[in-house]
Image (tube, rainbow, N blue to C red; front, side, top):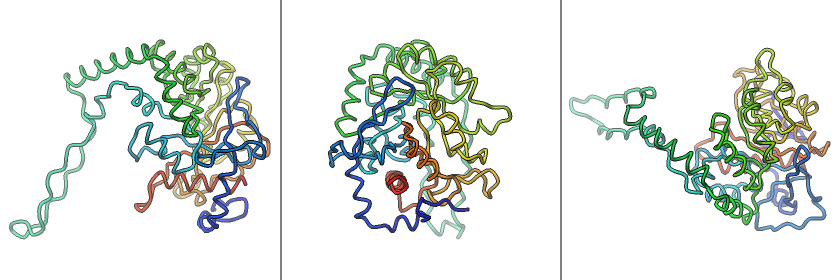
Length: 369
């Protein structure tokens, strides 16, 4: 079964729509601020708020479409690149991966990146090797090797330096990063620190930094333990901790209820694609039940658990995840829920992650306009 837009068109048909129709996106305003009453507020209406046509704008009929910057993991990293990708994709609101933010602010470099970098491949043998033999096949890549004592000492030193850097970082550095985004028409509504296993001082830093970025939420993998660890810090800073799911809802006996009961500061960063792909249940069932405890959702297209292949990421419009149903329900009910694209399907060689996120934005816009 293929997923279709509200007009019954496939992704291929959608891409054939006129460029003039897509250009109309520039008249929809960006204004999707956060409030402290349990979710984000929708802001002013599209009809009454002026918009700067030189800046990205991905709010359509009151629904804020954004992306988690993890979608661009295959592209060069860095906050300046994130801004470039947002402009090229027409993204005005992001769930910002903390690695890009901290690198911009001057965090120590993680030595694990260098240690895990694969060694350079040996020079290829020329065709017609001596004796007429074909070049030997490359050896299989070995698994991750344990760290040597010297490498472990380097990692321990880095962890200590990073902790010291975090807890002593002036928030003026964070405000500079926020201004850089905002001046380019981009808002970070979440900073993805995933800090549940950090020290108390570093968790406090994560919420202070996210707040200074203008975000209302710090995200973490969903679990009762993580909610109990992070909720007091979220409460202290008038913030939320957003619980992100993968396949947990497919586990026997799993429920979000005990996790949400920990504190009103615990919200859901609900991944509709992982939920549908692993359970086969329509995500709107969760949205109807928990909409006042859902801060944001991740949107993607997938096959369901009984398909062949099962629970597999698909190009938007080619899977079974009811994307249009989800977005149209949020539009209809005027729920102030951020809707973030998470690009996980395989990208064709002739494309890249920036182009694909832009196509997903247009797909979402067509559903909503």
